[in-house]
Image 1: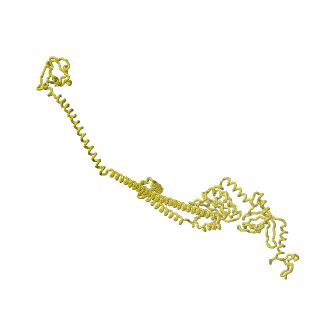
Image 2 (image 1 turned 180 degrees about the vertical axis):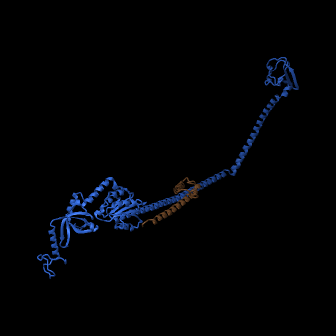
Image 3 (image 1 turned 90 degrees about the horizontal axis):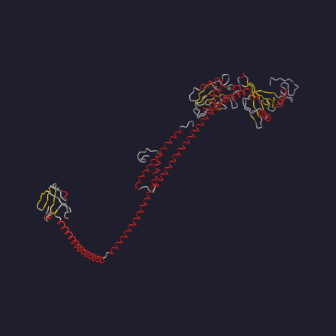
Length: 501
Length: 77
């Protein structure tokens, strides 16, 4: 304050140069109060202030919230050209929340938000800092023109199905081949790559550089995605950039980018700006990441999940295989035991049968032998010498008597038989032809040698031969006389000669 | 299943062998099993059992090798 010059000596606290000091000197507190009074005088009423919220709001235990608003200008190359500390007391905060609710909005102070706030310029005399005490926040300004446009785009593209297309693609199991669309050499690129490198997984990144702000953003991003389509076996693509102003991020709110994402064959992770930023690619992408680092984390987590799943499957496989082998081993052991038991029982069973049979046999044979012995003993006793002699005498007598009866019967039988034979011999003898011839019988045969047994057998003038004892008489029939032949000649072979023949 | 299982050629599956072994054990355990057949069947069953145990042990070794191989190739650990 060496250049400051006193403007009035009548005002308390102003002094002459290098004075020794007096009660008229300002103290820190009195000076602060004085400045505060001047501010009150200069801004007697609340004023509206516009700015971008750059610092993360900090809320203390009393519910008071502190943050900074900045102003950016094209000349400052995106850097804040002015900053002001803001305070939102708990009481005002509740009023603002209610106001937002009436507008159908949720009050949420997020970094990067463009705010229009009403309040008073103030200086806290003890701190000596100048600040803006917020009393109201314009909710319609909070969503802003850019936000309203984004909302319209989201609604329209949703109706077309553009925003859901990429999200319907399945999550890649192990997204190791990664396409990257970002600005070359940017902090976002480094953060993303660093996240992948530290994971230890063998990611392969195919980068397609594109401007991440300015007019060429949309065209560059679409061209980069098309370039990635030439990479074979790509698993996933990441579109990312770091935080920035709403204006910077607004370049991404282009329907062309959303439509391109909708047509890509692999999932897209959108990590644009910070956690509180929303751009159109966030809605069109498969997965939204808060930051570039978070985009890398998502890929790492997917891969880790896949690896964990593989390990889990390997464990299941190991348990299943081990359990199957154990089960089979138990089954074989049971069969082995059954086999041993069955074979043993079968052998013992047969052995018991044999023993039982042997016992039975022994018992029965012994009994039988015993019985037989007794029987023999009884037989021997029965066949004693005396009884045997008497029996033999009786038998001899019987045999002798029988022999006598046999001889007698034989004689009778022989006598009878002899008589029969004699009669039979006589009969035979009586039938002898020689004897008959000698007795005067003859046989008559016709010319053909047939025996003549009837007068009808020969005719008058026929020849017949008459056989007698000593020869034959050849005769001519001059007359036949019918009549009965002698009974002796019933067979007709022999005919006793008659006188008239 | 072939008649020569458990002793000669072994062109039968584990399940077939197990089924045959179970059948033999059942037969041996029956009262009507002829004594002349007892020795043959017990020997056959024992041979089968030995063969099945051998196969199981071999399978276990193979499975362990495969799983160990799997363990060694886990990436990123």
